[in-house]
Length: 173
Image (cartoon, rainbow, N blue to C red; front, side, top):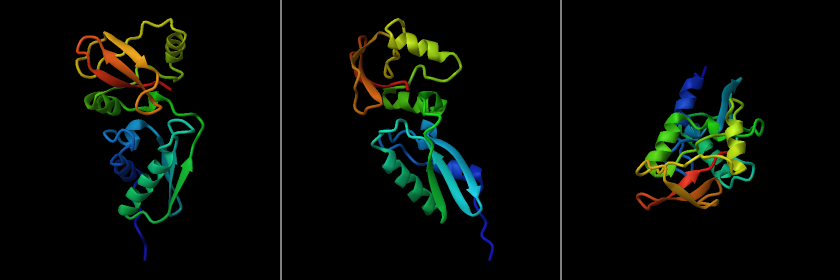
């Protein structure tokens, strides 16, 4: 008896339903950590790049991916940890950035891709940037950083000087 394997596109769609455990409004595909999906014979191989090597949610994400795919009938599955190239906030989809903003988290402004934004990131880290983080609630750029460390290691705490609301900013990596 021949078993029909789901298409790679179908698997991408299924993984678009798996929420990030720290920010459940975005999926693991919105976050850009699912790097590759392929069939190796009758085994589904999913390559995942953690947001950083010490991310405490990595094991939870792997379990969620595995559980969700098994719910859809995938029996043979191998998850691969892909550390190179390292994850960057440039991999967050536009849809993911919009979802973060709607949820009350300011999305990353610039990242580390080789498309010229490295220069902007270096200037920001050296304190030579005029980069302002926009408030996700009122969209004002009149904001200030309260702490480099927010509710999770990947976020910083900010406050809007106009609406006076605190908010998290998803830091660039």
